[in-house]
Length: 142
Length: 333
Image 1 (cartoon, helix red, strand yellow):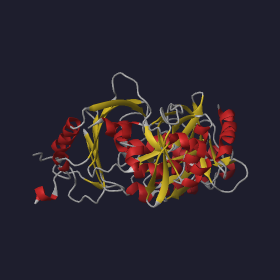
Image 2 (spheres, chains in turn cyan, green; image 1 turned 30 degrees about the vertical axis):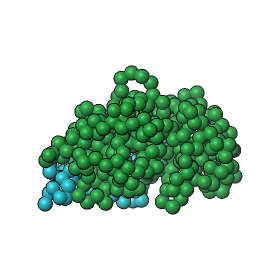
Image 3 (cartoon, rainbow over the protein chains, first blue to last red; image 1 turned 180 degrees about the vertical axis):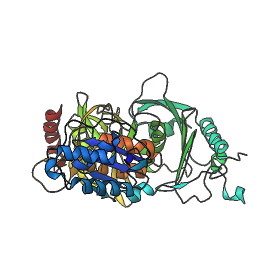
Image 4 (cartoon, helix red, strand yellow; image 1 turned 90 degrees about the vertical axis):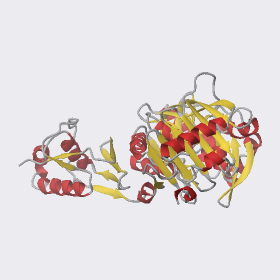
């Protein structure tokens, strides 16, 4: 059974630059630098390929590494899912096509998580969401 | 008496404009701003913080009110020593207790905002960077965003300087302004990452004494006060018309520099990674611009990857910075 994932996740933004993928998850406050091969896997899933088809594509492109590609991709997808950076979906959602030019060699798909901005991103002021919230002074509310 | 947040904040907006019959037009972030004040003296004390405006229709109006008022008082939160933010269309409201109490409200529908300083004391960040959260709220529905960075340029092409407080952004930006560069800000500027544009929000700068002493001649023309910022002195500068007369304008962003004081002899130490740029942009930006992350963060991330970036060492002699910046500018322009 092919497995599909969405790379569009709530409270996160992503940018690709020179093969590097950066994901900013402002819900958790973490941000991520994804390796060049990891970015290819992410782009494969974004294009609508299943995990299995992404593995097959990479195995065809990198025959010397074909034996370790399934486990490497599986591990990467699991870790990305655990971080909330990939969301399982029941069927393919076609997105931007995978670029023709892929890295010359297969490197282990991985990412680095940065936590230094978390406190700042999560340290928002007290939120008032009730219809009768902040504007009522203490002496009025009693 | 108002019973809901909508009524209470709407009453704040109406009341603030009733209290502010004196109007001035300025610009900020490429927008035309109509500012309203109680009197001309209050107006004069705030207007020089903004780039000059031109006549015509305003994009938004902001009433800046200083001092106690019984109607506005109703909007002070019960726990007034806590930061509070309210975001629910059509209203954005932010209460800050430090460094001085301030209430800022923005109505997206009427495009009217209020900066109210209830104690009557306009603390210096309110004078040098007035109404920044209001401009943040307005920008959240546009392609633009304020970002914590300085920017200087020539011939319509600008370099952004990003980094934490004390990294050397202001020193580099003011040194370049003193050397004849166009100035778009030392602390917060407005950027449009897809079009790679920058516009000045403020015409002010706040320098630490060490750097200020090294640019003494320029300070004579631009300094308006020396203030205390959490125990540290700040030279408060105004760079626009009637002060240093530096051209305050924006343009195309052609590069991003991350200043570091690492003791390196060369100015450019290495290319900067996009993730370093993102890190440099986000820290103070999210501290100063509450909420609306879903609009803010994607723009900051996009800007982080939009143009070439370098880590630079601004050294100990501000007068040397413009020449080094010029070399980078020449290579990117």
